[in-house]
Structure formats: structure tokens, C-alpha cells
Image (tube, rainbow, N blue to C red):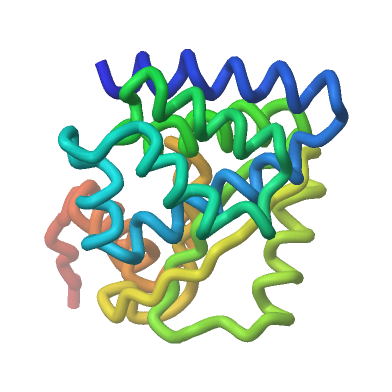
Length: 187
């Protein structure tokens, strides 16, 4: 249900953003609002509490975001409050990002490495992936010491494994598939 609600509301905001040519602006604003609620757990609990009136919830939104968000995104937040859908804000944000990225030809990817990549390395890899995929790739670096070295790239459900661990596993698989025969030496 959460995904369905998220998709429905995200599509409504997406249509408005498309008409107004504000896809990126609305994405940034909605993500920022969602980020505040996700980072402040007490605030999120209060905001989603059913005993808090709609007016009180709208006052919270006004006090926190009126100076930083467009009137369209604020009005969207008021609609969410009026319909009692505050707890779906995270799902709405995720769905909106998907719609906006698809429209703009943007693909989000994760580069998983053993050590943190430099900004230049991230930009170079993103550029190579962008030209290969013919889409703009927004790359995020995630550190995982289990990788050992190299890089593992996740783009949606696709994986590009250029990690040392992946290469070792591939070699191991090749060695396991090779039939071992005894070589005899004749004198």
C-alpha cells in the first residue's frame, strides 16, 4: 500500500513540476523536507502522530520550510496532511525521484570500493558510465572493506564487478571447471 500511495502522490507532484518545468527544483525541495524528517526522529514522530491536528502539522511545515520551499511544494505538503498521508512522505519522495530521474535521463548508481574514492575518481567513473549508458549517471561512493580492491558498481538491478574479490571468484570458478588430468613423464 505504501508504494501505491507514494506513487500516486508522486505522480501528481511530478505532473505539476513537468508543466512548470521545475522537476529538479521540486525534487530538491521534497528531498530536503523528507531528509529533515528522517534525520530528526522525534520531529517525525510528532509530525506523524494522529492526535496532532492538521493545523498544527501545517504550522510545523510552515515554520520549518516556508523560507526554503516553493509555494507549490508547500501546498503539496498541505494536501498530504489534509489526506492523512504524512507517514508516506518517504515513499512519495522515492517515487518522485524515480519519475524525475527517468524523465531527465538520470541514472543513480553506487560505486562500492574498499577505500573512499576521491571526487575526481567519482567524476571520472561517472563520466565513463554516462557515455557507456548514454544517460547521465549520478554516482555515490559506498565503502565496504570486503571488496578488497577495485570497484563494484550497482546501477538499479545491474552489477558491474571490477573488484578484486569478484575477479578472484571468477578465477576460482574457472579453476573449478577445468578438468584436472594427471600428466605423466616418459623417460
